[in-house]
Image 1 (cartoon, helix red, strand yellow):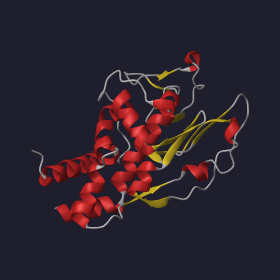
Image 2 (cartoon, rainbow, N blue to C red; image 1 turned 90 degrees about the vertical axis):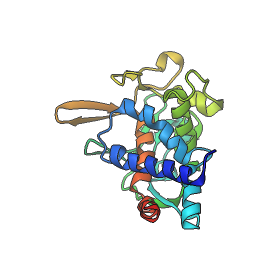
Image 3 (cartoon, one colour; image 1 turned 60 degrees about the vertical axis):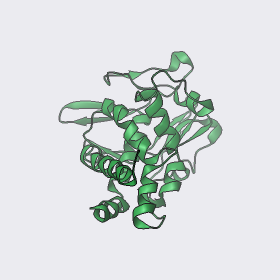
Amino acid sequence: MVTERDRLRVVTEDLRYLIASWLPGEIPLDQLRRDSVVLRRLVGSDSGLLHAWTTTMGKNDFFVPTWRLEDVMAELPKKHTLLSSIGGAHFHEAELGPMVVGLGKIDLPLPEHLQPHAVPLNAFSNGNCLFVMGEYVSRVALVEYFANRLGGAHVGKPASGKVGAALDKVPRYTADGAQIRDTIAEGGLPLCFTEITHDGTVYQVDALHSEILAIGQGLAKSPSTSALLDQID
């Protein structure tokens, strides 16, 4: 039988793991897939983090700093937008900004001077972080897609619904983490990624990995995370 103490222990271990492994921004991209089950325990449909917070702190006001998709898309015509992502993660000393992919040769504007907002955990988890081929994707949907589809929690499980089908069409790293998988032949998006050079190594970060990293780092650097760990200690 899983006790309340056991549940708190898992949450604190997961948070400390994100702080140590994800927050510095030097985590290998293929490890993000393997670690996505950690995020699923924290912010999935049965949020262990929210339960730990309300049990320990006695109030539902866990806040997470984040950019907002509506700010990124404020000037974008949706009918001409294939993909839009928030960004905000730090990777090898660089900030991964928003990604925008337009239909055909249409040049869409990238937002400037985005301001972070502190949002409650429920709003953070259920808030949208991606717009892909006409579908809005919430953080919890992306986390569960990553864990089930890419992270090995349910190997081979079909992507669910229109959101899962849209995410399947986003170019992403292959299983070995060495190159981006081109999905154009399968009716997917053109190749899109942020390229970073650090210590002579070139990294190409696709939109899905960028958003997953931003979710984990948002939780890791939240002042509420520090308050919760201090209280449990």
